[in-house]
Length: 494
Image (cartoon, rainbow, N blue to C red; front, top):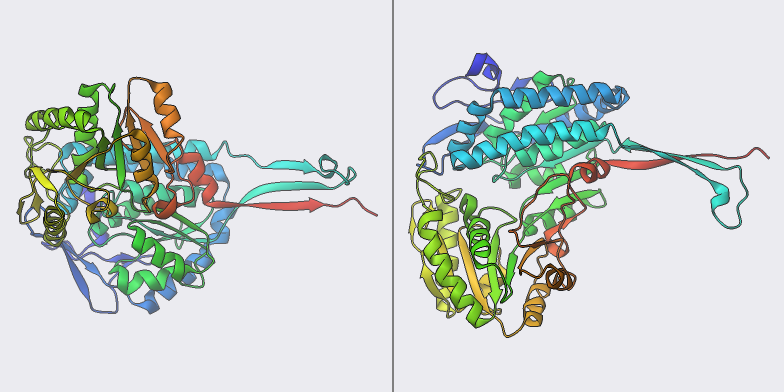
């Protein structure tokens, strides 16, 4: 344990049992229940988590509600300093956190390092950007029929208590992307990390505590989503819910949360459209990276490729050839492993295997891959895939790319727009004008021209339409989403 910095979050045994943070101290749940976190690499136990009770959640929410006004009253520059210090601590313990990420969720060294260092940069950028947010004043005579004299002072204020629910695939970065803007805007935060990824989330919570976030302002509760998630999002003291996860879970949270404001990043079944004039070398690299990095367990992963038959035939041969050097499945701790380690659990791998076999039963052909060993799924490419197949309408959270032939680009647009997902799409063409015209036809959050779908750069707007999300994220946009406008109107005396 580095410098005993994280000593109080667990009992220090092997494997450790972790405590949860009730906003004031690290404690053991009165439930007496714990749940194990198994490494996807070898199924070994990384640690045990507390399963908190609803009564403990009530207490945490009460603490968060009580602490929030004083936190919002602290000058912004002081909140900014705390976030910068949190970024510094994250960088200081980067090697430790990288090793933890690799073991807990099966990322390769490069992927884990990328997540930690991106979190450092993101936290600092959030802190800097928060200082540039401005309110405004409006005069009544700008609107027809009103005389000068009424003035609206429009400022940004906190919502109150933000419930932040993060996913397993980026348990540090996508947790910080919720926690940091919420805290900067004066909210208190009740953080629910994923079970697989919670150990990393607990360490992140400790970093914020050590950086100076006051008692009660940030807490971290652990336990299964079905056990505590529903209770959290429907809690009367929750004022906003920010969530990253599946579309089905997002829909359930929206129902349970009632009329609470929501900021969601949900499923993305992202297509890549390849025009006949595309730079083949670039397209191949981006499709391989976009489809197989972190074993395809990203909401921004490429899931299907559309093009005319001649284009797809040439593309497929080149993809299969380049996969021999660009992709190597194996233990993510090995320097030989490239892009594809294990998926998050053997149960997840079994599900992916079933989806592949179902597609084959529907008429698809396995061009490469398709086999499973424990939590490892070979990087898989399916051909002869039809738009009506279930695999096209399902987000397969694994290293699987479907190739679909179309007769025209209009048909490709129709297929994409017919999906109930709408996160991102990629368009590959040397003619950027053609790419822009085609992009405007697509009903998705973002269109990438000559690049694979991705969340960053983090100051760009990031959003999904349809079942892929609610609200807009990205540094300035997240800060705005975690606050609300409050006009105070000065009326001219009679």
